[in-house]
Length: 207
Image 1 (cartoon, one colour):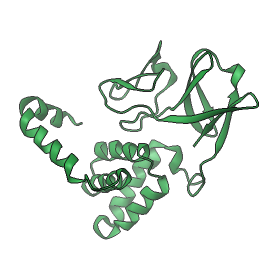
Image 2: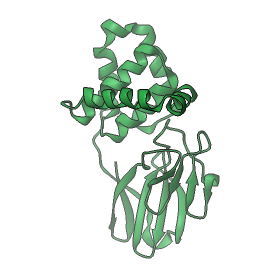
Image 3: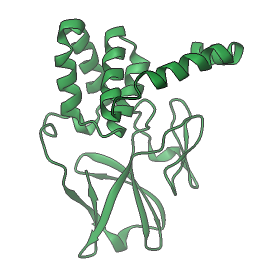
């Protein structure tokens, strides 16, 4: 949330809670992806950069594809106009989210070879695979793989942000337990976790 909303939550908690309850209930008959897309369009219409980044991240976590987000922007052209769509795309380009790169659009999800399982060190490793940056946590035969982008505003979290098993986003200090991906401080959404498998001794990740 913005500093202003945080302030109002402190000084007028009952009034603000009613507002948030209304927002949650107002879309109860919509599926998760549709709600996420509407939220993205709303933030673009208001040209609220912080909110747009937050709801863009939420939409991706809800399973909305990059192609669907771009289609939704164009479907809303009558209300947004070209200038607001360009405003949104400029932010997306600056964030450098892999899903939105031209060569990634229109593609099908598939398995990607990351590295030999035996070469993965115990603890946490940050690696690059097919232009996507990942955190790999390993404990014996257990392996969890996470996207390096913070689920708050899509900030790409560097490897230096890891202290023991705690990963801290440098922008707004959301903290994550790298062993589970769960957010343990300042936020409410986990790291994006990828499905994994081992084939012929090689760790593969699905996206």
